[in-house]
Image (cartoon, rainbow, N blue to C red; front, side, top):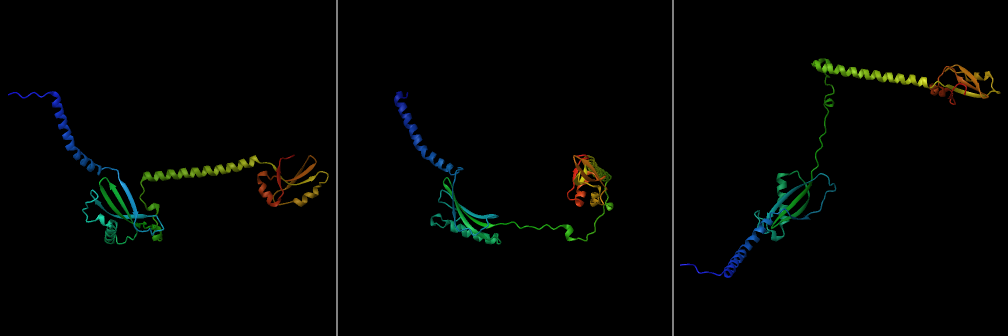
Length: 264
């Protein structure tokens, strides 16, 4: 027996009704799955609440202990806490204090701070115990100060390899050569200074019409013999064989001494 023939417009209408029924059935399931996956998303909201005032003036070396619990769908909790009594932070603070006294007896908690992390449909409550965790400074003790009378080991008593001895000898040779170069440079500098400044050191000056050789007796000294020359109507008395670079020695005896070339 053949199937009855259904005109194509009626078949299309029935197909659309069946398809709409499928979407109506699966839409709630899709919404539930979306809510579940959204609870695992990385976006979160954080709210911080100071529970006690900060008693530390010095904010350096701060450290924290924490106690936390998680509420699934903001209702279910498997740690025994009740969110609806508005005592969740007090309960976490009490538990943190008890655990700290057992596990960290030397830790002195200065203040407490609460935080609430909301991630999708789940909420995590945390209480932080803030304390000062300053590291202990260790004084280094020099071994020489501990035993100042310790016998010093002489290099001759050590078994130094031949290669190391050769290296030490080459370094000493280089050091000696460097010292010799510095000494030669200093001597060269002194000689060059002597060659550069050969001016006369003048200790007195008189008008030619007024000058008499007997006046030189007032300037006799232990540094050098005296002599004089005439130039432009002036007579200048100078230290004989006493070069200009020794001007500072001359100033100690003749404070008004100065340097000049012969004939100037």
